[in-house]
Amino acid sequence: MLSLELPIIPPEERPERKDAAENRHLILATASRLFEQKGVENVCMSEIAKAAGVGKGTLYRRFSGKGDLCLALLDSELMRFQDTVLNTFRQQTADGLTGCQRLNWFIDHAVHFTDTHLSLMVEISDVGSDQAVQDINQPHFWMEMTVKALLQQIKDGGELSADLDLDYVTSALLSPLDARIMKAHRVNRGFSTTQISQGLQSLINSLCH
Image (cartoon, rainbow, N blue to C red):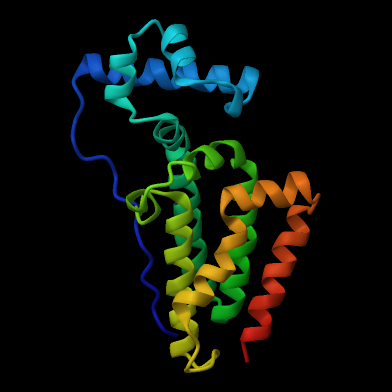
């Protein structure tokens, strides 16, 4: 069985001063409370600063914008998701599951993770810079790199066509998991997470042989 090397989201390395850490915790707790009360899309940065009792300068020194703040709120959940993925892949490898079976499992869980945290991930996606899109800390980019690693292993194992364009196929499979597209599919089109997951898995199964 081929080994699989997945991208790892690096932990925060630089220690914070006590006052900075306290401000960060206060801002995140305040934002989380306001988001729960009013909805993520209905709360602006100025409102968070006012409710937290900090100046806008303090807020923006900690977080460059609302997307950055939402990414910080999602951090612990994303790390748990990553740990679950890594541990499950190890067990699946030991159990002899094929690469396509593991990819189907990952896609299903990525769909449900994105849907569960959709409001935060929409704000994160709206950052919009090329740097953010290619940042391993961004949940969608990490998912994309994970799928590409799986597809590469599947291809190396002979389950995929040797001339398959992995870059494009990876992007195509993950496009529906872009939070903005997911929101349109869930809210505007009324697709369920089951429909989205099963549809993507059917595409994966059509590629595998």
